[in-house]
Structures are given as structure tokens and as C-alpha cells.
Amino acid sequence: MSKVEHIHCLIIGSGPAGYTAAIYAARADLKPVLYTGLTPGGQLTETTEVDNFPGYPKGITGPILMEDLKAQAERFGTQVRFGLVTKADLKSTPKRVWVDETIEITADTIIISTGASAKWLGLPNETRLRMNAGGVSACAVCDGFFFKGQEVAIVGAGDTAAEEATYLAKLCKKVFMIVRRGEMRASKAMQNRVLNTPNIEILWDSETEDILGKDAVEGVVVKNHKTGESKTLTVTGFFVAIGHKPNTDIFKGQLDMDDMGYIQVVPGSSKTKIEGVFAVGDCFDKTYRQAVTAAGSGCMGALDAERWLATQPVH
Image (tube, rainbow, N blue to C red; front, side, top):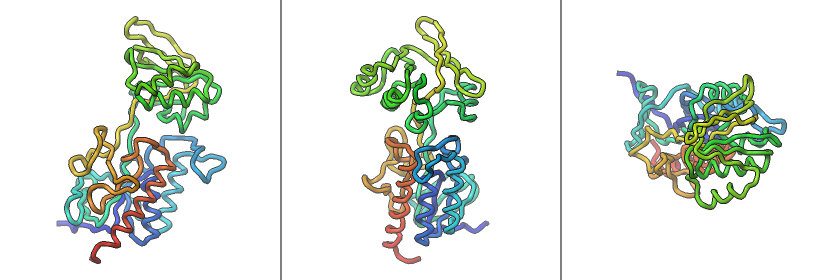
């Protein structure tokens, strides 16, 4: 039987939150080990231009930014390992996790930074243009600036879609909002904001059939499922705002979560209901979802872990 490895500070997931937690944990001599998950670097590795992360006046690509953060974490002694945590027992002492269903690890403290995944429509051209940085995005705040003065489309009907549509309307000449039903799910306040924005045109009872363009978005084919009529919108950007799914399934039944699966923490901290377990980044934050706020929460997670460990008996 193989020996179970024991880790002082285990970080589950990479991205800005995980790597920042690793930087602070390593500098505090917590000897962190970070497992990247299936997408090392998280959502930002699918983003080309990042213009709003502090310290990069000329901008930076998402993959390079993540490599920089990874290198900084490793510089202070973090062990970065590729692997997916597939099972966890957070209530045991010490805590236990399994990587790729086979490697068993125990840990004194765990920082969860598993992030969230944007929901997509699943259209072939959506995937192709998104992966090729062709103007398909799930974050208007991140990428709206690149479409300043242009016409864009956004799909969604909730508060996030309404908020992102009004944000885009401040930058773009015209915003087409594609709503699947004859009403929006957004709060009345957010609906009123959309309805009172003159350069937002709502397409009710409509669904996206296709996204046009070889290297970049050139148009969107929209079908009204009540009339059966299809039409093409001449737009250069396509934003998907149908929600995110936090990557927290393996912790269900152990940590408090909201009805969407976001981990709940003690306000003003990264502490979960289980002593020695902390949550940072997009796995708990459904409000901001920005690289810089994720990084800030990663710092909080490491500091909270360091302070909690300092109260525990020396092993």
C-alpha cells in the first residue's frame, strides 16, 4: 500500500486566486502544494488581451499573465502540480483529498480556488471564435472596451445580462439583447435600466442560430421562435451572459453553498464553516468575477490559513 502524502497547506485550483494564495502561503513558509485542475491558470487562459490587471500598462495576454503568476509562486517554493482533485473529505482530521481518483493526500489546511466556468450556448462557431479570440466573450466588463463605438449583441435575460448590456451601451454604438422568452428574469430595477437605455434593442422570443465570421465576429443569425423569422444582425462582438457554474460539486454536502453552488464564507474573510478550509476566487464570488478581485481574495485565503495554523497544536 502506497504511503499517504501529508501537506501543510494544500491549494486546490490555479488561476489568479490560487496562484496569489500560493505566493503568500509560500512566503509565510507554509510549504504550499497547488494542484492546477484540468485548466492550469483557469478562465484567463482562454482570454487573449487583459488590459485591466494592475502592473501591465501595455496589457498582457491571459496565458502569459498566468505563467507570470505561476513562476512567482514557484520562486518562493510552491510546488505546482498538474492534477484534478476528484474527491474530498473535509470533515476528517487531517483533511483528506484524492487526486485523479488514485492519489490520496492529507492536509492541515486547504484553500479552495476551483473557480467557475461560464455557461455557453454550444454553437460550433461560438466555440471556434471564442478559442481564437474572435470577438466572443462571457465578460463584458473584461472585453467591452475592445468594441468601443461598434455594434454588439448579448444573449441572456437575468440580472447579469441586464447589467452587462447597460455597461456595453455606454461603450458601444448599439447593443442587441437577445432574450429567449417574452420577458426577462432580471429584477424590475435592472429591467427598467435596460428599457430606458436608448441604444439597447431587445429581441424578444429569440434564440441565436449561428455566429458568422471567419476570423472574427461579423454577424449573428437570430430566430424568433414565435414567428419563425430569422434575421442577421451585423455586429462585431458577441457576449454570452447566461450564467456561470462554480466548480464546487466535489464539496457539496460538506460546505455551505447557495442554490447555485457558490461556497459561502464568513463575510469579510475566506473562512468556510469548516475550520482550516478557506474559499477564494470565483468559487465563492458571484458578484465581481474579476482577475484582480480573485487575486485579492487569494491573498486573504493565505493570510487566514496562516493565522488559523498559528492557533493549532504543533504536529
